[in-house]
Length: 358
Image 1: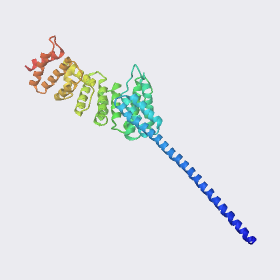
Image 2: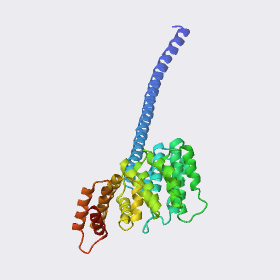
Image 3: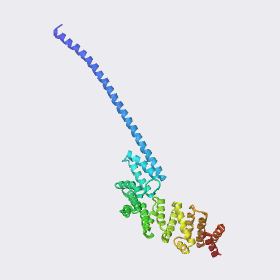
Image 4: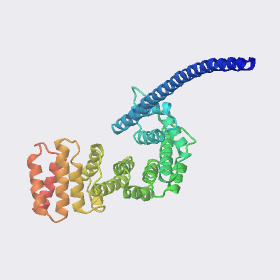
């Protein structure tokens, strides 16, 4: 064998050995690559599902808060609602639903602001500060009806501050701005009407706002409550007569009124048992049939038997005026028969009625 051929054979044999070694190395590299890829895949999958589980827990927590808060709000537990919603905002400060819910809580709490001598804030200023701050933040991005609602409630917060003797409040300005944005806004109208009456304004000065509030279908029971509360703050005849007038309109609208307010309306009517001039003034603000219906409505209040007889005998009086004299006489006689022997306002009034009709 020639030297050249022998060298070729040796090179070929070495190549075969090297080729086999390379195959082993390549195989090992491939196996290592698979192992590393598998590890990376496992890490990726594990991280994905861990992140997904954490995200799900986060969403569940936010959803639980968003669900629980309206329940507190509907029961009038405003502090619980506020605190619960604050937990959600701490977790998700940019959550639109939680931000909107915070504003809703603030407005409802301001509408029903009360001070408790045992627990909680001792002044209105302390109570309204965080609520007003939340509304001011939201007002920066709100518009239309929402902005008008917010500005009206900021005005109401300013009014509550004024009750603590705080000066430099901007009550009129806030209400005016709310009405500039939305002239028919119920909250701005009813709060402005209440504010006019609160500071001693006339019924005529507040009437435009009160009428606009009652004509709205937004939160109708709140509108009714505020209209009557504003008129019942004063005890002068002109305010009390207006309260009866508006009570009749509210009754016809089918609005709900609390029994405390109905008690006050009945008390206004009861003045007529001893004050003929006031009774005559009552006849000028509504029809006799309306007065009968108003009294029937007012008698829903939690009252004793004496006051129930007062309302009943006044119904008989207005029935008499409307021409239903037989029905009126029967009621007068029933009231006399049911009254205690020592007499009462209702009994005296009924006996006078019997005398007239006979």
